[in-house]
Structures are given as C-alpha cells and as structure tokens.
Length: 76
Image (cartoon, rainbow, N blue to C red; front, side, top):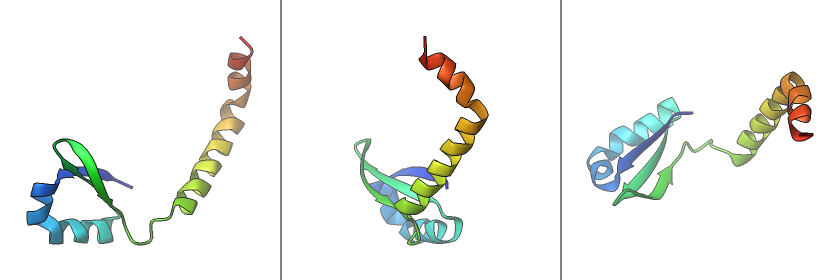
C-alpha cells in the first residue's frame, strides 16, 4: 500500500481526486497542518488484523531464512 502526505489546505481543493485514489489504488493519505500529521484517510477495507496477519507471516518467513544468523548475533 502506498502512503502519501498532503497538507490539509491542498487536500481541501483535491478531495475528490484523493478519495478516488484511496478507493481505486488503495493509497493511504496523511493530512498535515504545520508539518504535523492531524488525520489519515485509508481504504474502507483497510484492516489492522489483515496487516497483523501479513506482518506475522513475513516475520515467520524472515526467521526461517535468517533465524540462525539472528541467533548468533544475539549471543554476542
């Protein structure tokens, strides 16, 4: 998923375009005011549980590939 950042002032003038992009391209937008994130817009089907499951699977694959090296590093 692509993450983009945009000022709230610019977002006001482009809200239709932004919502289309979020819906169709699964883009996530962070809205800023004075360079501070104040809100986020994510696709409606966005789910933390889906992300958690995917991250857990990726971590499992990483440990299978690199687990031995990681274990050696932690013993130092």
